Length: 210
Ligand code: MN
Image (cartoon, rainbow, N blue to C red; front, side, top):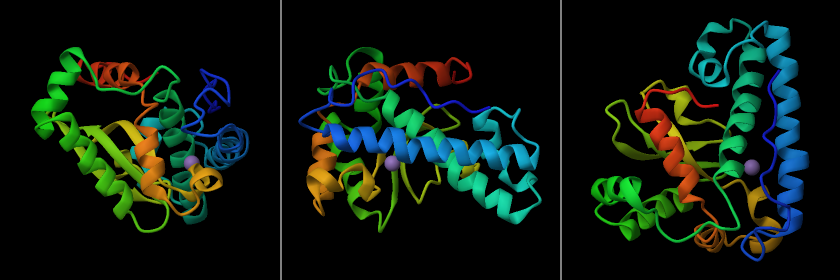
């Protein structure tokens, strides 16, 4: 049984950056549907006991094509949104401090260079998808972008995502309409760098995500 994370703040907590109706619809409709559809498909495929990261890294082991596609789309949607909602916070924004801040600076040159780069990937993703900050197999930070509800775990290149920007229109259209870049800019005011740093620490210390 895959369980949607408990939202750690109220639907209106990220106002004015992300509006309450978008948050409520995103969490109670979109994310809830991905979660239900994942559970249904995983049960049919007999893979419900697999940890979600393991499941998404081993899609090829599901022989039935329709179930494999359902698990890819909805399992991605389930996992991606758990990560997205967990790494936002009304207390977020600013720049990462401490050890993780240093790692990020070293990887991209500066925080603003990182922000430019991931924003460029988010803007450049045609249609729906995600821009990702991941830890690679050598524990370096890496950026990438994927279509639909895919994520780096499915690519089996050793990338483990620690933060993702949802660029589906459902994430921003009510408030920002076609202005995706404005949404991405606003999202930077609510990123919880404390949570992203925890995700980084968990991976480099070899612990599995909760
Ligand atoms: Mn979404």
